[in-house]
Image (cartoon, rainbow, N blue to C red; front, side, top):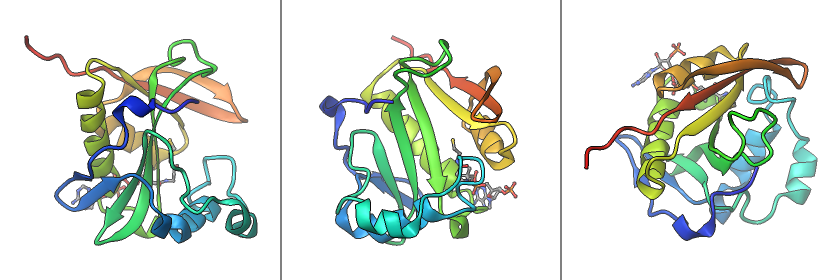
Length: 179
Ligand SMILES: CC(C)(COP(=O)(O)OP(=O)(O)OC[C@H]1O[C@@H](n2cnc3c(N)ncnc32)[C@H](O)[C@@H]1OP(=O)(O)O)[C@@H](O)C(=O)NCCC(=O)NCCS
């Protein structure tokens, strides 16, 4: 995976009805440690990282790269939305395309925040890079993620075996705009 390129970064904070999406800052570090060390968050992502290792190794401002968006609710980080370039994706249908990922703290699940944040991030991307399709890979057993992908308008391209599980590859075509 590569980042989206510095030309479109950083974004102005993106606001939704309940949330703010913005580039990571120093004050997000503790929430990143929580997110990346949570076994619940990593059930379908190959397992969490160790909290001690993260405390030692995370940079002062974690995940600072073009396309990395912290999701904030009432001033506190609740999740991370990742828009990257799927360079080297193992499936040809996804290779080189813009790619969406998302991780939210468990206490923020079940309130529609992920849908709201990802829809806003996709809206930002379609303004920044008009016409770009976006791909998404998730384990098909990850039902919350599969529901989210469907709500965001992703449709199935294919399923494939990787990392010891069935993976679902979806695509969201860029909205057609009239001239
Ligand atoms: C995938 C993940 C982001 C989904 O989070 P989520 O909170 O279930 O997703 P949504 O924001 O779409 O919320 C949907 C739920 O909120 C409920 N909800 C409550 N209030 C709502 C509101 N105002 N608007 C919309 N939905 C609302 C919905 O009914 C739905 O509940 P349900 O799951 O019981 O049907 C989360 O499970 C997660 O972070 N998982 C770990 C990381 C991961 O696996 N990522 C995938 C890698 S690609």
